[in-house]
Length: 163
Image (cartoon, rainbow, N blue to C red; front, side, top):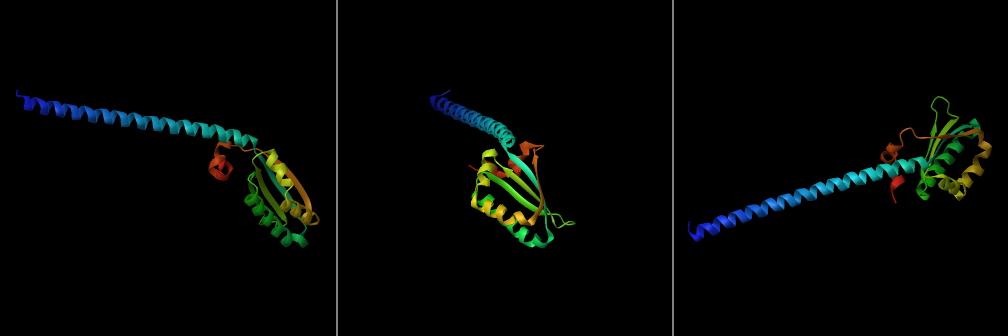
C-alpha cells in the first residue's frame, strides 16, 4: 500500500476516533446533567417537606351579623389581598362565603411559619381590619390545620419558594 492511501486511512480512522470521543464526552455530560437535575429535585422535595412542616395553617370559621355582612365582606377581601401582596411570610389568606348561609365566612390562612403569623398580627392593615370588624363578628373559631400532603404545597403555592 502506498503512503498516500495509508495517510488517508489513518486520517479517516483519526476522524472516526475523534467523533466517537466527542460522542462519548457529550453523552457523559448529558448523564451528569440528568443526575444534577435529579439531585436538585430531591433537595427541593426535602426543602418543600421541611418548609411545609413549619407552616402555620388555619381555618377561620366566622359568623357575621346580617346587618354588617356587606361591610365585613369588603374588609375581609381587602385585608387578604393586601396581606399577601405586602407580607412575604403570608402565603395565602383566602376568604370565602358559604352560598347557602351567607353570614358564614371561612378564611384559609397559610403563613410560612409562626414568626410570619406573629408579624402579620402587628401590621397596620391587619389591625385596621381587626379593630374595624370586631363589632360585626358574632362568632370566631380559629382552627389549626395540618397539610395531609405537604409535598404538593410547592406545586400549589409557588410563592412559598420565591426567594
